[in-house]
Image 1 (cartoon, rainbow, N blue to C red):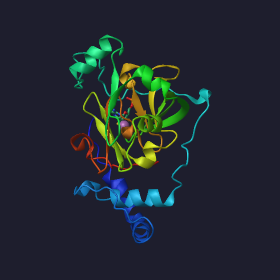
Image 2 (cartoon, helix red, strand yellow):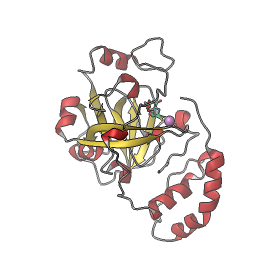
Image 3 (spheres, rainbow, N blue to C red):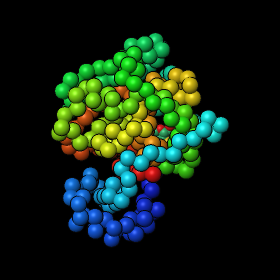
Length: 251
Ligand SMILES: Nc1nc2c(c(=O)[nH]1)N[C@H]1C(S)=C(S)[C@@H](COP(=O)(O)O)O[C@H]1N2
Ligand SMILES: [Mo]
């Protein structure tokens, strides 16, 4: 995926938020938001505080009717099954795919009492949520699909998430990765989706498991999930891939 710089629009928005951010900083939200020492991401502090302070933290993203489901654009040209794919999928992923992901297991580790792997069946036993939501890509398109998956909160609780936990890093088989905070991790619409429009997720849309985090822009929705790492400190898991994008990108 190409790097995109969204700074022009963001800079404009941030200028407008400066006073709100300053007010909030002196108010109840004293905890420092994530920052990178990266000039492109300096504004993260303000958007993060403004959104977290001003918006209802449990508000649900809009859900749609089946009749509103749209086609879903192909975003990365890569088909994980195609060795000539422009994207680098790991050998491990291609082997798993050849066996229709029967041997797939999600790694859950870090600040959890019981780090372990979960097979798809084990994940499905933890529960399911179905939601028809709009995916909004930072490149300007959006699409509506129905997703079914296990709530991330259920997985974290099952693994025995520790009190020190602050962030969840999510890593894909293609080395793509993102992190989210606990509010988003425990948001009821944040799910690890295995089903799209009633069928197993197609390869290009992130088989066998992808994150759906409906409170943020498209690029936070990590596809081809391999590993989840719970951390007590802020981490930017793939700064080389996503550093042109804001870390917190609430919609
Ligand atoms: N593993 C992985 N996840 C990813 C990406 C990626 O390149 N690799 N691209 C992101 C971006 S920018 C978008 S808009 C969506 C696209 O999802 P889609 O390919 O199902 O349309 O996936 C996101 N998750
Ligand atoms: Mo995107």
